[in-house]
Amino acid sequence: MQTEDGHIIRQCLNGNPAAFGFLVDKYRASIHAFAYTELGNFHDAEDMTQEVFIRAYQKLRTLRRWDNFLAWIYSITSNLCKTWIQNQLKRPDREIIEDQDPESLEEPSIVPHSGNLVFELLNETLESLPRTYRQVLTLYYLGSMNSVEIARFLGVSPTAIRQRLTRARSKLKEGMLAMMSKTFEQQKLQASFTFRIVEAVKRIKIHPTPRTAGLPWGLSLATGIFITVMSLSPYLNLNSVIGAPAGSALSSRANAMKLAEIPINILVVSDRLDISTDSADDSGISMLTELQSAFPMAAQGQGNTWTRKFDIPTPRTNLSASTVNEKIYVIGGRDPAATMNLQTVEEYDPKTNRWTKKADMPTARRGLSTCMLDERIYAIGGWSGTNETTPALEVYDPATDTWTKKANMPGGGRATVGAAAVNGKVYAIAGWGPGRPFSIVEEYDPVMDTWTRKTGIPTPRGYLSASAVNGKIYAIGGRAGTFQNPIDLSTVEEYDPATDTWTKKSDLPNVRYFLSTSVVDDKVYAIGGGPNARAIEEYDPTTDTWIGRASMPTGRNMLATSAANGKIYAIGGGSGLSTVEEYTPEGWQSSPVSPQGKLPTKWGKEKETSNSKTHG
Image (tube, rainbow, N blue to C red; front, side, top):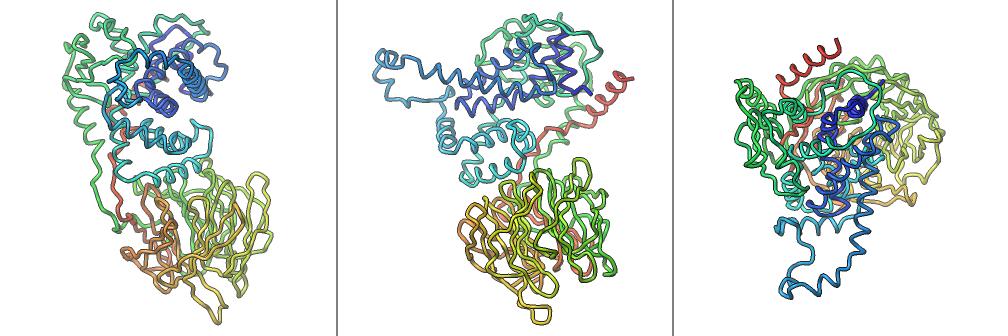
């Protein structure tokens, strides 16, 4: 099955160079951001991005697998950037410096082309970070890519990208992050860049391939309008502007309404570039109005608040939950009547506040623990009967909605373990067996499907919760002793998988068992649990300190929590609740809603109509 990129490439090779604008429009932000991480200068990055796309078009016929276009153009960018840097190092700078005015040497040696000190400060800040952190920050803020897209671009797992983003942000002050976001937004390539590339590649001859029908609709209204306008050549004169060199100061002024980056009815790229408005009608106005309502600015908030959300369809307790691609998967548990263990899986989408039924887990169980690794959820242990514990490990893939049975925990069945994933491995920590707690720690290797015994936790316990932050796992709370003589704990112990060692940390302010923990911005939030069922406390591993936060409206233990989009969702628990409550951490401040993937309804309908006509 041919991909969207494949359709576009076929059109290009069939003699339609304007179709290449779709690929430019789709990937220009990503390539520009990557070039900036390599070159450290917006002006050079824009020139490089232009060179990359022209080079890609020239060599398009050499690309064997069209669905690999992104990886291929990434490779081109990387190679061209390396060559550029090598050439810069060979420049005879000493001779240039000798010929300069001495007064000019008092200026900073590297000054961005805008002359604004903000750019210099931004460059210095990014240069102070490891290269991997610079990459993810730039691709995220300048390239407008999410963690999954960055992972695909760089060839690593989305989990690794999210970890890098979190760590990179933690190294920057809040003010610097805000400044970086604003600066990157101002430097994004505009629609005129796509126009310039398409005009350039129209002069390049490439060998054709066998003809096929129809360029699909897709990537951007900007390119769609451009190709349409190009077919109306009497109304358009681009030569004086399109031929300008990369980095020339094209005006970004628009004398009419803008849809995304393309103004509707009138686009002024420069004083000499004008698209006729003779055929304009009221449709532009309605589309603009709809666009404005589609992209609202989210309300600014200080957080530390709770909000009630839609109830889970299957009320339950003693359940577990994990997040994949900002959707939460609630797994297993026990029904409110306490008559049966569940294998039910339901997906919650925080963006739409909706629930969807998914494939059942193979083994019905309660008191299981889950964690996410490489876009899959690992369900570990639990009670499979009234008092029978299971060593089962089953893996859920949300992409295919399927479950796979994996190797059992060798240490035997146990429930309420602390589960967390670090550096490509899954860890099952402690837990409760028949009448007693365990100190067992086992590491699971998904590649080999094998378990390895590690150093046991210093405080044997069950009913605990575990979360990973910056490569270390924090085992929090729980219960020791026996069923007859339980000892509720406030104990916190840190496990370092790299050294296989445990370290005692500051206790929870309150003893708690059957609690749940989640991580947002490298802070651990301990929520609910007995006997302090409404408590929520925030732990900062960097300072080893706890802070009390706003109490949960519905007090409960045996609940599940999971974080998505910077918020935490407390689900079910207690005697079998259906309650779902959303917690916004303190200091949280929303950012503008991204327009990517959120086209107005009218454009969506037009696209669907066009697709139906195209494909019969």
